[in-house]
Image (tube, rainbow, N blue to C red; front, side, top):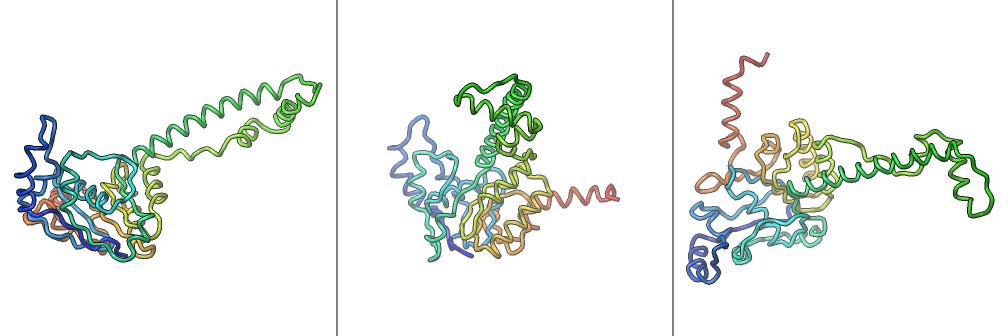
Length: 291
């Protein structure tokens, strides 16, 4: 499914003309021109988007910048803030986005997902687990006190205490605690929890901009995420624009790749990417050690 058909950045002439007219008016000792200049002289074409489109390139190539521009241009939800300068809005006005008729219907489900979102989710899980553990200890102390209490009901005001004593005497400590506290959040590794975050957040009928989703994921979980994204695009009417270094994600079936390190920027096969070639040469050099 395609909700965003095309996305374009300002041309070199647009950037130069704007900066010549406005840079002195906005400049302070703390002001950056960002994102003006990030793609200058890189000849970035209008990006023609597929159900899965991948932006690849080295650090500083502008992958995350393009995702942020797309998200802001389309008004997509996001959980965390991102760096922007006083020139960001001016640059954004000069970007172009062509959406498909189904975009407005899908916009409610669509969002930008970054590494910071995943990190915040992992922190929330840790905080929740710590509080559950604290509550469990409190209930075990309550259970011990109630089970061996010498108690006699004297009025209706003692009814709650009576129930507590009876429950403690009828049940084991673990059953007493389990009945009073929510089931523990399953203790998972950061990678497993990060993978669960993506499967929870990505719904049917949505456009998702994913910024380096492989962070925190083991190679095996990256393969599982790859399968999940492929199935979501194929069967559940999702569209993805992804920035990534992961060879597992780069090799997704049917994905269109833009290499932002090339001049001019252009679509390519994943095996042509410089860092993939580096991996390939490394494993070739050590091929004799695999046996």
